[in-house]
Structures are given as C-alpha cells and as structure tokens.
Image (tube, rainbow, N blue to C red; front, side, top):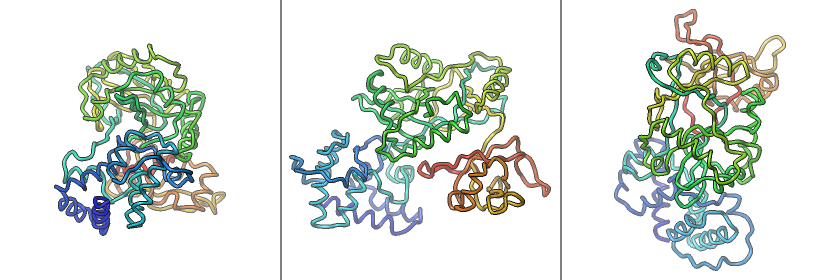
Length: 439
C-alpha cells in the first residue's frame, strides 16, 4: 500500500494551493515519478472506467469476494477487466478499502475517489500533459463555426446539409473488445443509456466511434426548445438510473484508433459512406439509434437559406453544413458550420434584476458579460415559471454560463458592442461539462 500513501501525499501537496503555477510546479517535481504517473492515469484517463459509482461502492454486499488482492495496482487491473459493477466487483473493492483503512483512513477515502473516478486535484488533463507530455489521453470533438460570420467560406465548395439538433452531444465508443461507453463533448462518462447500449452491442462491429446528438425519441414532433427540456430531464437522472425514451441521432463516425490518436484523414464523404453502410447492414434492430439524413448535397449556396427557412418553419433550430472533402477536426473549424435564424452565444450571468409591473417580485432580466466586458441586459424569453424560480433562487443562474440567442451584433447608445434582440433560451450549461463563455 506504500504507493497509495505516496500518491496521497502528492494529492495533499498539489491541492494545498489553487494557483495554476503552483500546481505546475508540483507536477514538475514529480515529472519522472512512475508511481505518480500511474495513479494520474488511473484517476484521469477518460477511456478507462471501473463501473462503480459512489452509491454502488457503499451498498451492503454480503459474503466474501473470493479474491485476495493486497496491491492497489492489482485492484485497478482487476477493475479494468471486470468493469460491469457486479456485487462481486463491489465486494472486491470494499475488501481492499477496508485493508487500507486499517492503516490510514485518509488513504482509504482517496482510494474510494479513485475507484469512482471522482478525484479532483484542481487541474485538468491539459495541465498535466503540459508537464508530463502524453500522459493523459486528450478528448476533443469537432465543433462548428457560425456560417453567417463568414459565408464566403462556402464559395466553390461541395457540401452536405443536415438538420441542426438541439440536444446533447454524445460520443459512443465500441472498442475492439466490444465494450460500449458513452461520453459528453468534454469527456464526462454518461451512464444509464441502457437501450442505446444494448443496440450498440448487438448491431455494430467493434472498433468504431459514433458522433451524434442525444435527444428525446419524439424530437421531431416537438418544438426544439421543449424537446431539449424533455431530454435534459431524462439525462439528469442519477447516473445508475436507466435513462429511457431517448434516441441517439448519429451524424459522424471514426475508427476507435482515429479517436484515441485524435487524428483522422478520412473525408466527410468517406465517413458518410461508412455510416450508411453501417446502418444499412446493422446486425440487429436499432430503434433507439438513427442516422441523421442528409437534406441536400451539392454546391448550390442558395440551398442553405432555403433549407434553414424550412427547418425553422417546422419548429427546428437550424441546419449544419459539412464540407464534403474535409477530414474530421478535433477542434472548432470552418469545415463544419452551423446556421441558425437567430445566432447564439454562451455568456456568463453576472447579476439578476427584479421585474416591474406584473413582474414585480419575479425576475425581470439577467445581466450577461459580452465582448470587451460590456454588459448586456436580457429580459425576454423567460416563462413565468422561470421568472419565479430564478428570482427566488438566483444562485441557479449567477456566474453560470447560459445560452443567449440574438439577431445580430450591434452597438448601444454609448457606442459599445452589444446584441440586437438578445433572448433567453432556457439553457443553463451543465457545470459538469465545464462550459466556457464565448466572452
């Protein structure tokens, strides 16, 4: 257990200050320490999970596991292979934790956090890798630029248009061994997608990664705003609660190796052909996994506005433009563009204001931080229920990142950058996704 005690001391040291420079200094101190390296991978490798939540870890499991594990690294080797969260796996963990706790309760508590992938040391994989290059696999998805910012980017290019979905980005991996796992856009593991997981296991070949949007199953029968709320309600259920009534709508694919190396050279056309073959010859029914259809393919730029108007008229949010000969980029890029009637930004809420007239005693507006620190007042888009909720519980909004839609950039009476028709979108970014404001 000496290695765990050594890591415990490291955690104490690196969490003794919130300074990023201090934390980098601590990482530099342990740069060549193979024991610390191994524990950091156990804690922060997004592709290695152990299938045990805090709730499972503390459940009452009778009897003995039948395994004699007296080495912490051996425990994690076991959990890497046996990661389905069975009672036996839980009992194995409890026995090791008990053995550590006899000697050091603090180290036992640390071990619990490692098992549940719940350790925080105040710095992310990017910071760790800046000192110990390549230690933690990175996790990035392709993100779209805004078409109306630079429409000339589409000139003389062949492209495909699909519907823009207002759901939750989901990466679904089926590795070479057939294990299925789901991640948010920033690498947070998503549990409980029982219907989609079963279909991934039965219908598709190993070694693939799908990229798409998680929505309610009847998404196209609802206004996008209401569909988002409905999906959010299901997804926010406790992690070990089955999440039913969702459909995974897929729009891209990579090999598992391309995903791990974060390097893809296949064009959108090639990836789309692979997707159509995958869905066309699925080995089992997939009622909860759908291929998002292409609405148009060609080089006629007028189709962008035509299809945007059609989608919006049916209650949709907008469309996406995919450049046909472009690879998948693991960052924001112009090879994929989003098109919405109203544009949107993620902005930080810095204050709330009480309403007047019939809105006295409820929320009148929020103040958000925009370009160059300018403050924009957003008073429209809130339902009466939201106005009551957020006025009575302002902490639900203050210093949170929220989505604000607007028609165009403008300048206020003082000549400062502002927004025309800023409107609330009922979308507080999930803090677990560590969303950053655009300004």
